[in-house]
Image (cartoon, rainbow, N blue to C red; front, side):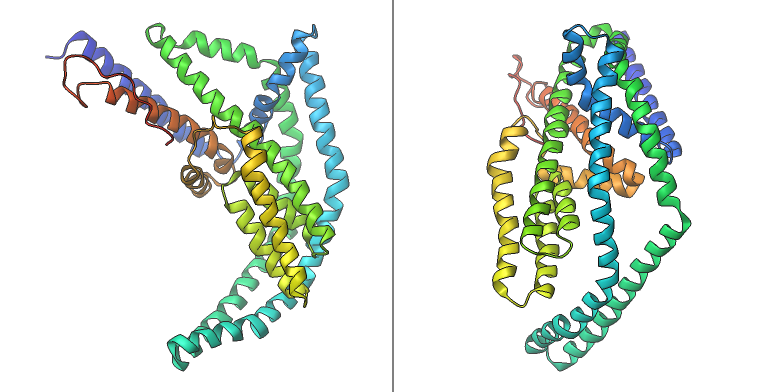
Amino acid sequence: MKTKAELALTWQTAFWLIVTAAFIVLFVLLRGVLLPFVLGMALAYVSDPAADRLEKLGLPRWLATLLVLGLTVGLGILVLILVVPIIVNQIVQLAEQAPGYLDFLRQRILPEVTQFVARFGGPHDAADFQKTAGAYVGSVSSWIFGMLGHVWSSGLVIADLGAVMLLTPLVAFYFLRDWDVMIATLDSWMPLRHRSTLRTLAREIDGILAGFIRGQATVCVIFAIYYSIALSLAGLEFGIIIGIAAGMLTFIPYLGAATGLVASVTVAFIQFDDHTRVAIVAGVYIIGHLIEGNLVTPMLVGGQVKLHPVWIIFSLMAGGALFGFTGVLLAVPVAAVVGVLVRFALRQYLNSNFYDNRVEPLPLVDPGEL
């Protein structure tokens, strides 16, 4: 027979498993409409420290919220007005020149790779490779341009973007205005017996999220500006869109710089006959990666973000595969929560009789980064 304590623990475990399962099911069913709410909550979370400072200066919460979001949205609109026309122009140019790039790949790159294959695999393997690669390049290009044309002509992108841009500031306003009240309410719902432990876990999660989201977002903006300006000064075609994309991908360890490096060097190799110009473009990314990894990220993000690069990449891929773009946005926060809970569970295990059945408990051991 189980004791009352064991029965209570069993019921508590069952209750939280049911709540978690219901939340996941609800998220799956509503994932198509959650994007503005996820973005609004993220914007409110990032803006909360600024609103708290204004509130301490004597402003009412609603006015502090209005000022912070007004400044944020205003800067966003200004950036869109200044940058979007340039990005659209470069996208149009890329679409016009893409067939020429594909022909370049077929006529120059593909023969050189085929010769390399022939040298090590023989003429038969080289012929098979050339046939397969040529068909693959053609099919991929047809699929990409067909998909872009269908999405653009259907107007779905414009409609979804308009809905997100209208709803996100509104959702963010209400979240930010009532943020402290919501946090206090959630705190009052915590089980009294475990409130101290849960508050400790919540503070650890908040520290990780604050360090990663607020700090890493600043890093992304800094290097989006750096890469786009540096590549444009180097004379690279589509330098702005490549630089912005590489900067925004900086939050994925190593992938942002690697993606930008491959894309920019490929375009430079096609555009320039001078290998010195290609080396300059590559140097932009090498210098940027060194500055980002050794100076900017340690200064803005710090060492409190206990998220292993492999764990971040896996969570982003899993979130995107399961829930699309909304899953990508939620991947890092969920990974942070899971990481904190797993480290806590591991500390409890290392301090339990399951790990060592000695009479005296072991001291808590920090297992390190997940």
